[in-house]
Image 1 (spheres, rainbow, N blue to C red):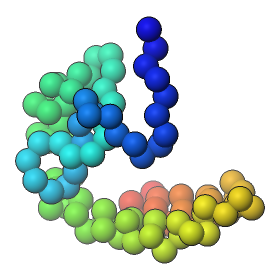
Image 2: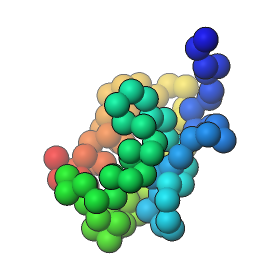
Image 3: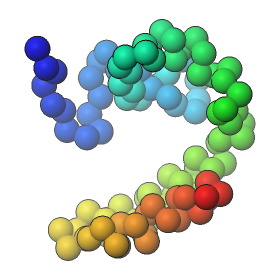
Length: 98
């Protein structure tokens, strides 16, 4: 039986997170197929492909600030794809070095 759909940003109690602070996971995470939550909990933190918490903290704060500065404008009904791309996606990708 399919799971009921949830609104974006609403975590279910059985979801785990990928927070930058604290032990374990914080916030929403949905794992399916090969990557169970147990696998992710055990292996994700030590995977060499991912930046460490220390290396990720500053870019994370900067991306949160980009979001906070633009969320009101992005929430307007008149917002289109080009605006979203130029005002949110491109600045975030720039910050990530893409």
